[in-house]
Length: 178
Image (cartoon, rainbow, N blue to C red; front, side, top):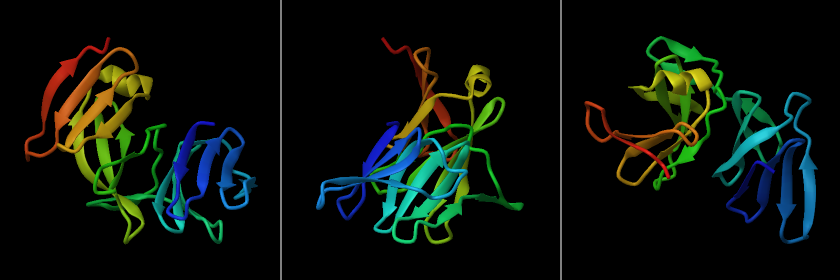
């Protein structure tokens, strides 16, 4: 099991190596949800609203309607239009206002994308200059806290903190985790 979340109806959803699994507390039963043959390992599952989950799998993000079990691939929109995207294994993050974010890695930069639930796509929020090894390893985690700071980790090696509240994004500090 890679990820667990609870939807607004109280069901527990698990992202597993074999796909998506649902625990219904009213019946005490587990069900494996067969969505399509391409949906295998689900690294992260997050409740979006009453009827939708967002899944990260196979370098893609998608929405799953929990009633119809229909998969909707997610895209991002910038000034040049809509694009399909490879999400490079970046995790999803949710702030205190329930906004959902992900990170799109480049070489020497990372773009924070914010989910637009009305249009069902991500929009570019901001692009940060990041250490080259962050892009090279194509891994790491991020979190957006209540003070509008973006925390980027590079495994056990480094932790970078960016202040997103100002128009000129500044790297606050480099912390060395113990």
